[in-house]
Image (cartoon, rainbow, N blue to C red; front, side, top):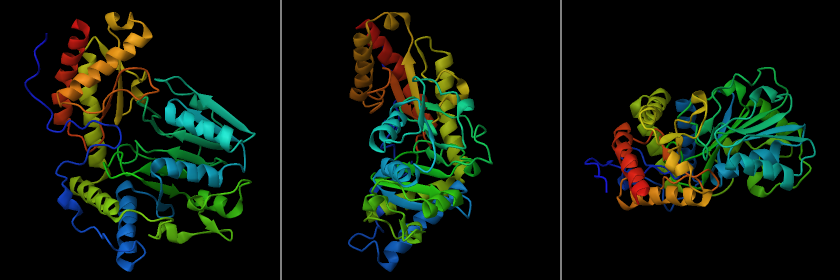
Length: 384
C-alpha cells in the first residue's frame, strides 16, 4: 500500500458541471435575491438585465450583438438556435465528442435536414477544419467538454462567410477568448465556467443571425420556448430582461454574484489566466508522469477547462477494455472516498480515464494538491 499524500485540496469539487462555486462563495451571497417577486416586475426585469449587461461587459461582446437568457441551460440554447435558424442553406456540423454528436443526431433525425455534412473525429482529435465550408451554416462545439479538445482559434472561419456559425461554447465562454466577429451564435450555461446554478442558458446573436431570424421561417413548427420572433420581427424584450419563461430569481442573483466576483479579479483576462494556470499545473505533472497523458493529442487543442486524461501505463493498456474501464472507475471512486476529488471520472461515452475541471472558479493550489493523490490512486489500483 502506498502512503497517502499529506496535503488535501481545500475544495474537492472538480466536476465538469455543475462546476465548483467561486472562491469565497456562500449562500449569504444570495441574500438579496428577489424571491417571491415576479420576474416581470420592474425590479425583476432590472435584475435580469443586470446579468445581461454585466455579461456583455466582461466578455467584450460587441454592442451590435444581442445577449439573452433562455430556458433549459446550454442544451436549450443550442436547440433553440438550431430549430430557429437552420434549413435556409446547407449545413456543415462538426463533432468530436458526445455533445457534438448529439447535435448531429438532432439535425439528421429530428430536423431531417437533407443537405447536411457531418464531419466527425474520434475522441482526442479535431475534424479537418480546412474542409469546413462557411458559406454553408456551421454548428460546432468550441470546447468538447467530454473529450477535452477545443478549437485552437477562429482563424478557419472567414470574415466574408455567407453562412452562420453557431458555437456551443458552454465550457469555453469566460475561460477562452471568443473571436466574436467570427461567430454568429454563441451559447453557454451558468453552471459551467462561472459555477452558477443550473437550468438557464445564454444566447448571443450577431446582426447576421438576427437578419436570418427576420427573413427566414423554418419548415417545422417551433415550440413556444424556441420562438424569438413575432410577425417576422425579433422579440427584442428577450434581450432586455423579458425572458421567454420564468427564471429562478435565486439563480439570477447567483449569476450576478459570479459576475461581481469576476469583475473584482480584473475581468475576462484574469479569468482566463486562472484557468490556464490550472492546465499548466496539470501539464507539468503529465510531463513528469509516465502513467498519464492528455486525451487531446495536439497541445494547441487541449482544453483548459475540461481537462481529460487517459492512462497509458503498459500494465493498464494490456488489460481487456472492460477491465480498463473498471480500473479507471475504481480510481475515481478512491479519490471520492478520500474526499479529495469528486466527480472526476471520464464522461460515460468517453474513453475511460479522468476528467478534471480547470475552469476559473478552481484554485490552482487545489489542482496542485490533487496531483499527488492521482499518483496515489493509480498506485492503489495497480497494486490491488
